[in-house]
Image (tube, rainbow, N blue to C red):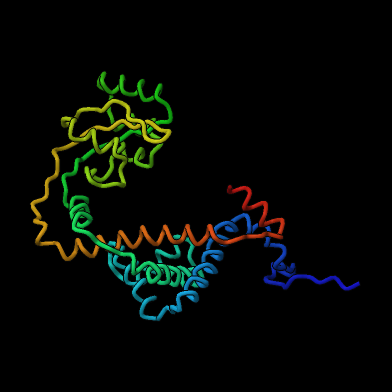
Length: 275
């Protein structure tokens, strides 16, 4: 009987490493991500064919430019470094750019930027914002205990470093100024900001399953930029935000419509692990 072995992919000294030797580890490492991306690729390809659409090189180049403009340096040369840091090699990067170009084209007819959407975007970028620090903890009891310590004069920064489970804890709870119109921040936090004086500490605020304590560290930052002076840029940003929202919606919808049957045991275990 002939035993079929998988291809040799590497050598360690004279020891052969075959593809099957790596398969289980590779699936555990990135199996769910790879499967999700591939299912979405298939769904997008089907949607494009249904509508008789194709993706041009110019549209893919446009996606590269959009990624580049999101970088602080705004340089295409930095793009590969960012992709590499996020785990995207040549193959996955090409697929991502194609997916984004395809999704943007598929939703293009649904994009409608209203005046209220532009005004909301203007508020997010140029509206009033508050310099602040935060402490995030997992329980109300701990939040109440910390609030008592802070009211007694303990340092907010030191307490944040010791107790906060947010990434800002290492910085003493310091975050970028919080804009009262920015949906990135929960409304429960945004609503309390105008009620606090400089240096004042909020009562514990429930956000999902965590408790947040906020301290205002400076005077409100008020921009003097006029809406009319930046309206073209606000229109561009509003359109991009709506496209991003619609693209995410379409991605979820396309994936939900797919019927996935898995035969490989390693893949089954990996996907069950991440459910």
